[in-house]
Length: 312
Image (cartoon, rainbow, N blue to C red; front, side, top):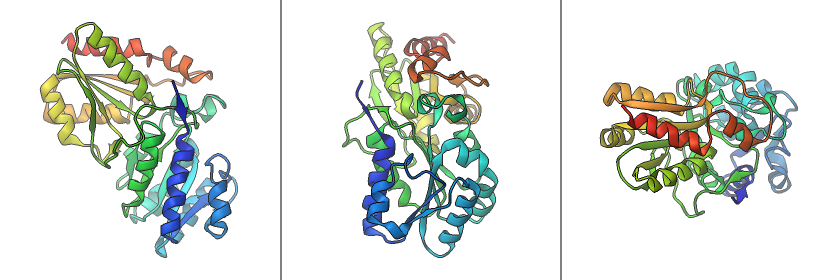
């Protein structure tokens, strides 16, 4: 499968936006190369602030900039932002509701194949989803990351976007729309079962849907690209039609997208929702595709999860 860099796509969008709005500035905690921000620095040398390996300080600098009307974005590895600088995001950005954007790199097992378990992050979505006032976006591929970046900057609020390693599967045509806060049904063969997928696992979820169809099981797949605020209305509509679902994410099953879908089900339409993700464990280091297969996120695992959901 062809891959494209979500990092490069997001940076391209930031550069385009910065050309139209001089208030946009990047705060870099030694992430210039990782975030693919060299072209930004070359074009806007006075609008990239390098603070060194100091994520907490980067968030505080961004918060200060936001109070003056600037539009800062802090880019670093997902865990370094959401864990090392968690308290700063919570107290100095989320609590006062400042317009600071965060982009987390190396999200999930797919995100950290070159650097191993210490640089793979499966808790980031859950951490920021629990933080009042912070929106969370998980685009499915580079084309969606480009559009999601632009959508994120249209909002006057704290936002977090999860990106990968820079070699994510290309899933959708580049002209595929992205709408903040809305779920998009990608394919709909029938209402036997729903597959909710979030992030760069989308290609596997689509393949699983096709295998199910080949077996006579006609389901649908929904792209949950905005985990918070989640589109509760559409989730409920889908669950009422299918009465069962499997939720797939490259993240701990606690606190992420699958938790959100399960919460909506419990409130508005109780039915069986099988959650596929990391089951409260730390995976080993290794090649991304092999890790996904080994830890219950293979195409066959998604097929089996859909059948299990249907069995009740």
